[in-house]
Length: 316
Image (tube, rainbow, N blue to C red; front, side, top):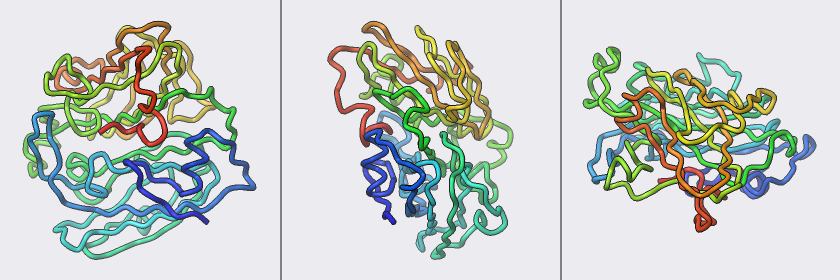
């Protein structure tokens, strides 16, 4: 049995983290129990690249919530705590689990805790979020994240040289206005909570880009958190070498220009650049892109060797 740890936004079993992130094989006989704990916290988080903030509902005080990573066939022992200082009930909806919505996914009040276990039987990339009523508000205010379930066969997919997580979602001007959320009156779009977080072209205050070297296989774990809009994910100046709907290696698509993700859906995207330059990873709905849904992937021989590796796959 292993105990989960949080390391730069990645939660995984202490043994599993070393093995999985290094790409080592884990056989069925080595399947293990990975303990995961998330704490619902109502806190203030960054809203933009200028340092403005917003009152958010979160998992572990961050938006997106921590990455949860395990291997196909592991047992995930999941614990949710609702911080006693919170005002609202919260819950968890794990898209990687087959469970009971009336018990495991039920809301808990401030100060309460719940635990349940499940075995992820399919590899892939999955959405998790709060499912408490009104669900649209809990998602819109920041209660979402990603679960990566690596295939137990290490050769099921080509080995990635670098990995990044992008979670797209809309930001509503007033986080208390549920009617505006239901009417889809959002103002900005974002990858990983901040509009243009990885795009210094459209926001001079942005300080980060994604990085890789020519010839490297860059793997993007993409989740559409919505809560309402579809995403047409496209690499400007590039072509997706491989797309795996739901991240399952059996669902492979080759040489794709664009792939549409519904709200609550996810996929794994592989990109290889033959030369130095830049790609703009966008939602090709122009309203979504030009209000924040653009991430720049810089391809350079001088790329930071730590970016997109180990714990640095969710860039903050």
